[in-house]
Amino acid sequence: MSEPSSAPAFRLFGNRAFSFYPAIRNVKYNEWTYARETWSEVLVVNSKTGEEIWIPRHFVGRISSADEPVLIVGLTRELELKGGAVWPFERQVIEMPPPPHPGTRAAEPSPAAIPPPAVAPSQDTQMGRLILYVISVGLVACLLVVIFAFQGVPRPQDWFSKGGPATKDQQYLSLNREDAYHDVVRKLGPPQREQWLSPESAEMHFHALWYSDRGYIVVLMGAERKGVRYIGAVHAASRTPLDAVPLPGGGRTTAMLRHLPKF
Picture: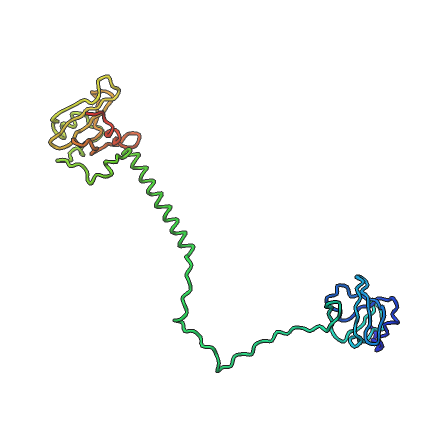
């Protein structure tokens, strides 16, 4: 750019376009043409929008003598368009507050006066509690399955009973599922009374050996009366199972003892 001239002769521009420097704020296109002038103002027209504005002469500076790529008209102040007129642009300056005087420093609260921050519950603790809860529920479920599988469905009267039925001795615990009638008599002695709980035509036979003075009844079972074997002992008065033997396929004979034919 060549050295600008000191004579802003707008009327010499004719229809040539020019730009202001710095550009007028709030105006999208910085391209103007000369319209007319008075002794105090110059009217310019925006080449893109056709908007007309008056520029006070004391804001117009020097004009560049070169017009490539565009003719430049200097402004002595940065202007902005407001309400259809141009005004000097005032930059807002935020005043920083002065630093506090050492003698007027605000008293800091003592550590004792500051409440402790609220402690949010740890996610690890919550996850640990959840895992412990799931394990506990699983153990209880497994225990119930074992109870139902090996001892059958418990009766409500057994849940509320404070203690097991009393017997004079527990010699029936020496019996096992291989013991036949003569093995029972050899270990416990002859029974006070015997009773078949099923008819001879039944597919399964139950033989009860009463040891009333001891408080229990020994029960034998088999497909034939000659081949019955020990399956457990029940309390003589309440018929509560006292002993049960394991079954070959798993489980125990507790459920069988609870569902014996009435006798």
